[in-house]
Length: 255
Ligand SMILES: NC(=O)c1ccc[n+]([C@@H]2O[C@H](COP(=O)([O-])OP(=O)(O)OC[C@H]3O[C@@H](n4cnc5c(N)ncnc54)[C@H](O)[C@@H]3O)[C@@H](O)[C@H]2O)c1
Image (cartoon, rainbow, N blue to C red; front, side):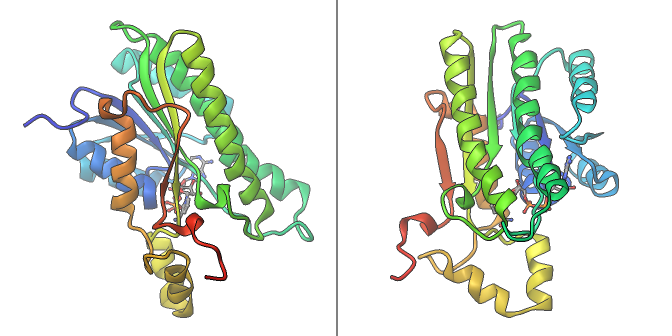
């Protein structure tokens, strides 16, 4: 049986670990040709070999790196069907402590990197010989709506909502069949979080309590949403915000 992403060419940034790795695994299982794009060459290459994907070193904050990736996709595949802009970092600095270097570094990856990913994707999706088409999925967060002390992270994830909507309506109004949506994970049980819980067990209860469902999400659950948005099944979805957070932002914090 054909997979849900059969014959699709997909790039997944931050695909070397966590949510991105989960997306790479699911997309490969669904028949996509996947490029794992990450700064972590060791983990990225290992994930790619295991899944039958290809690893490409990409620093999402670098315009030159995006140009090189576009040239590679053009030369090897001719066009792009799916872009998952997922790479992201945290800073742990609040408004009292953040310095400009920290702020700029985080935004250059979490927001400028996503803008460059959208630009690159649109250029490659327009080159599809079957006509311009494709799906861009940006990883935002429940932090797009609920602030945490990390001011640069909170700002970046709120920014992803505006970026996504602007890309979506601009493409649609230009007559391009290129969709753009954001996904909003809540606390998700990645390997990094598992390590944090092993070191400080109280972190687990705190993360579980964020959601009315009383648990964290899994990378597989986030990947399932990314799959829906990447596939043709979501053909009428663009400019949308898709939560995968067990009701976290629906719940008043005192209830
Ligand atoms: N884990 C969660 O609970 C959670 C919740 C909401 C949103 N998110 C978002 O999900 C995305 C993935 O997070 P994760 O938890 O899987 O983290 P992670 O640290 O496991 O994965 C992030 C990946 O991004 C890569 N990366 C970092 N800087 C990069 C750069 N400049 N260029 C290319 N790749 C780079 C890292 O090497 C890593 O492989 C992020 O955007 C994050 O903000 C995570």
